[in-house]
Image (cartoon, rainbow, N blue to C red; front, side):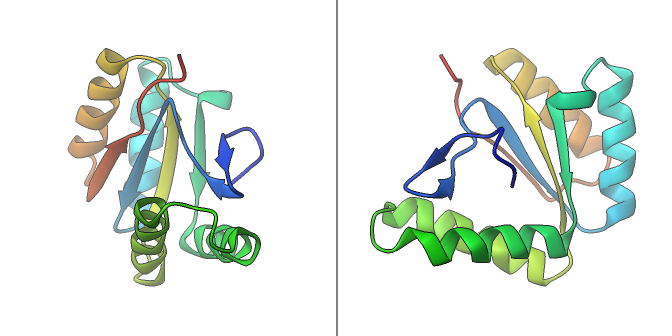
Length: 122
């Protein structure tokens, strides 16, 4: 993932974001267009291919050691497993719960397998 997002112990911690997995790049692209149509584009949305996600996760794991919580480690491992199956990703800035719900609804309409909100930045 990129440096704009939060990190804890070297692992991506997307506080204030919704992390969405899609079975194909086509699904992710359609959701990206739909999110853009409701005003979420530019820096608010980051898109990752399956390969980009694997590279980022592997890079994070190399730096982490034992500092990350078991829950964070398990979550990232599950994301890596999905990426290995070819899933693509959108990470969308959602500073409040109402927007996070709307993002998840839009993602669901475009084939999202999973949309996980990671709290708010505040």
